[in-house]
Image (tube, rainbow, N blue to C red):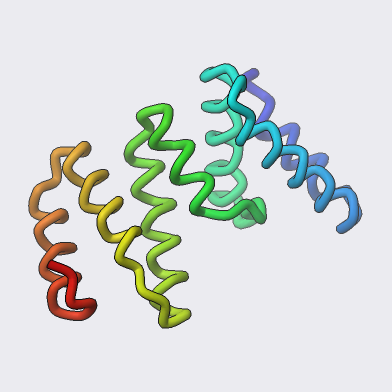
Length: 130
C-alpha cells in the first residue's frame, strides 16, 4: 500500500496512449461503482492527488473527483477539485451556479465561513445569484 502511488507513476509513464485511456476508463468505472469500499475509494483519490502533484494529472473529470471526495468526507480534496471545476466553468463562460453552491457548502464543512461569504459575494456580483 505504501508503494502504490510510486509504483503507479512508474508504470504510467511506460504505457501507450491507448493503454492510458483504457486504464483511466477502468479507474472511472471503479470510482463510480456503488459498491466500492471506502478504503479503495480513498486510495484512488490519493492516487489522483499524487499524480497531480507529480505533474501527471489523471484525465478524470474534476466534477467526479470532487463528488467522490465529498462522499468520503475528504473536504479539502473536494474543495480543490471543485475549485478546479469552477475555474474550468468560468473560463468557458458557463454559469457556475451549482459549483458555487457546492463550494460554499464545502467551505462551511471546513469551517471557513469567510471563504463561503466571499463566494456568496462573488456570486451575487458576477452571476446574479441570490
